[in-house]
Image (cartoon, rainbow, N blue to C red; front, side):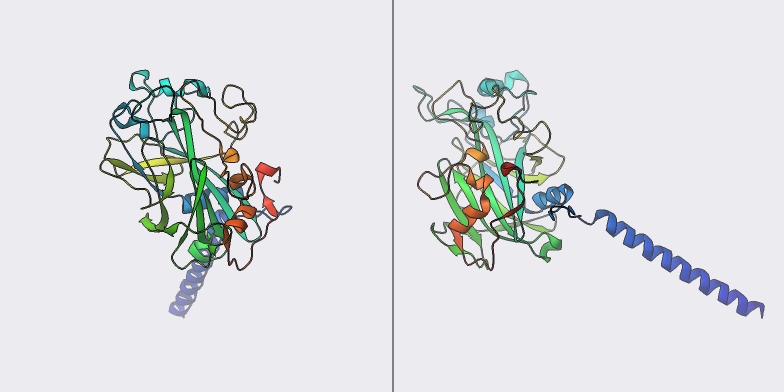
Length: 340
C-alpha cells in the first residue's frame, strides 16, 4: 500500500512540475512577444527595433586610399553624424582627420513607418566627406554625405513574424534605383527595375546586400556597386559600433540608430548648428553641393516629391512598383507626418 501511495505522490509531483514549466514557458513568450498599441493598432517600438535589425543590410563599402580627401581610406568609413561628440556639422570635414582623435565608428540611421499592409524602413549611412581625387576649386566634393535606401516589407508571419522583403529603393546622389529579390511579385511601375536584390546569410538569417562606391558614396544593391580592391564589409547590430582595423576589414559591426530617438536626427532637424533652415540639408563649409537628410532626398525627374522616400514611402512604393497583392497608403505610424 505504501508503494502505491508513493507512486501516486510521485506522479502528482511530476505533473505539477510539468504544468509549472509550461506556464513559465508561456510567460517567457508573452514577455518577448511584440505588442500592438491598443489605440492606434501599430506595433511596439521594441518590435520596430527588432524589425530594423532583421532587414538591415550586409553593407559593403568600397575604399580608395589615394586622393585629396581619402586620408588613406578613412574618407570612406561610415560613422555617426556626432562622431566628434557634438552635432555641429560645419566642422566635420576637418574633425574626421586622424590627428583630431575621433574614431569613425560604424553607424546607420534607420526609421520605421507602418501601414496595415507593410512596413517601410529607411537605412542611411553617413560619411563626413563626399570627396574626389583632386580637390580643386570646390568642384565635385563637399562636407557631409548621407546616402541610403528604403526597404519595403510586406506584413506576414514568415521570417519569424518579420514579414517578406519585397523590394528596395536606393539613393545615388540625386537619383533613385530600385531592386527586387528573386521571387518577389513586384514589377516596375512608373520607374523600371534596376536589378535583382541579393541576400547574404548573417547570424543564420538572410539579409539584403547593399554597397557604396568610394568617394561619392553612391548606394546600390550589391553587386551593382561593389568592392574593387580594398574595401569593407559592415554587419548590423543594435549596440556595437566598430572602427575598421584596416581598409580590407570584412567583419566590421555597425550600430543601428533610430532617427526618431530622443535628441536624434529628426528632433534636431531645425537645429541651426546641424542643418540648414529647411531642416532637410546638412551644413557645409567646404566644397560645392551638399548632403540631404532622408526627408530631403529627391530624384528630380520622378513623380514623388522631395523627401517622400522617407515621409510618404507607401505612395512612393506604389509609384515605383506594381503587382502588390494589396498596399495601404494610410499610416498607422509615421512620425514624419505626425502620426503616432
